[in-house]
Image 1: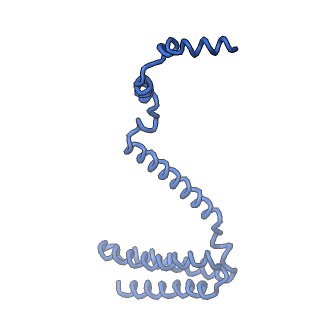
Image 2: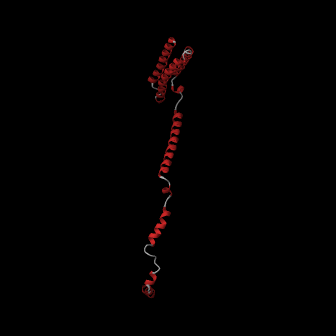
Amino acid sequence: MNKLEKHIRTNRGKFDTFEPSGDHMARFRTKLEPARVSLYSRIPYGLKIAAVLVLVAISSVMIFEQAQKYYFSRQQPLEEILPGDYSEARIYYTSLINEKYTEIDRLSESDPNRKEILFKELDEMDGLYHSMLKDLQTAPTDERILSAMINHYQIKLEIMGQIIQQL
């Protein structure tokens, strides 16, 4: 090996002539840089935001639908919640109220504007009743809610009776 090492050392200048110039690596790197551009940098920033918003909207809708299905599957029918006496009272008062509605409808045919106002007021009263129904769904054994519902029926019947007398 001595001869080989000696030969390399004596002819070192000849071996270095085939080395690339000093700026060769810089030119090589500049040629490689465009190849490094990733797909993510080609997509505009606004399009990225829009894609994220679409994904969030779709997932929100899906979560809302699942929650709604779960909520409605857990609701019990009113007849299952109400004890027997209250269920009978509800049927009784509902039939009386329906009779009063038909009587008011028959008596106020001459003034449709007044009839519309009366029915809007009665619908507002029903809104209160529907809020009591929601409360009953959360606490089905609460006697106060059941008493308030029957009281609502009685007050509504009284008001409807007064409306009929005035017509």
